[in-house]
Image 1 (cartoon, rainbow, N blue to C red):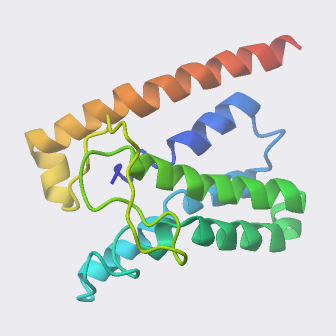
Image 2: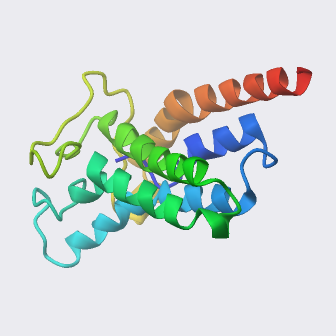
Length: 175
């Protein structure tokens, strides 16, 4: 998986690009939270659920079906978020979809169950430039492996997203 530090990056970049005048703050915060929600399935390791199970890591919660459910929830609570149902549902949906895509770009694990419940198959993208993050925080923060993951995510996710976001922001400001 990509690290929990990187999953919010696309939502943060969108916030930089568009600004909080276009994305209400409550919606923005919830989108950041939903960019992390699929990894709630990490609890499956502690519950004895096999990794390859549909309830295991990168299973159901890493599917387009789950993203649609999250988007529907976002649309449902849109009035509280002070956003349109379309904007709220779409942003929450995309926050989860981008999480799935980032995990499919990593070079380890079993892949993601993108098409669950129609298929239990796990998938990766053909190109997997992002180093898979260790699940153990101690290994992530205290070892060379963790450092390699951070450098990989900076190069392949954070840098391109932030450069694009700032460029978009400059274009929007000029209009």
